[in-house]
Image (cartoon, rainbow, N blue to C red; front, side, top):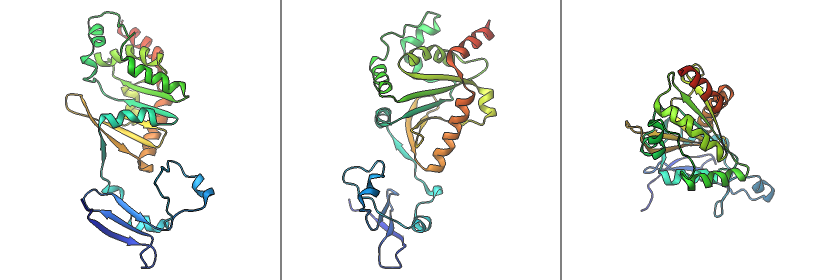
Length: 252
């Protein structure tokens, strides 16, 4: 299907290059201008894929005619594409968990063991997931999580405290923070993953606590806000073993 393009503007004085166009149906932005040709300059570019061409634009062109944040169209991806992010990131994958329960946990045998008061047998659970975590960790990549816990903790949160033993064994660094401290730090209410400090995967749940889809956020200003939340949470969060001991003592 042929695109319906709108000419937004040009910074060339009217001769047509460089310019900005917008797809009226998808919201995608199309720019054209002189290509970047110096091989020393091109060598400095990151994530330039085969078939892509770098072009040079005046800053004022994007300021005057580029998309504004208020008009941003959310980019929603399915869970298959979301899963691929855990192998394509380069350095760090960081998670904030804010919810009081996750419906997917409650469908597992390990959750049933936990709620029956039995020792949870984690060996052999999610073997493919564990293998991928170990594989990525062996490449030097870091997986980190901070989990917010209420006082008193919910059953789902206590289950995840036990679950942290399994995650830690495959290379994740798991820490916890109280809901009160999280609120004092003004941490976000949303669950999200932050990849390489440049891409946020915002997790969307339905009213029954099922994960339904994921929104990708790449705007630098927005990503920076989530990075600031990560830094604050990581500074004040407590290693899960220490947090679990303090929680058990408080429940006696």
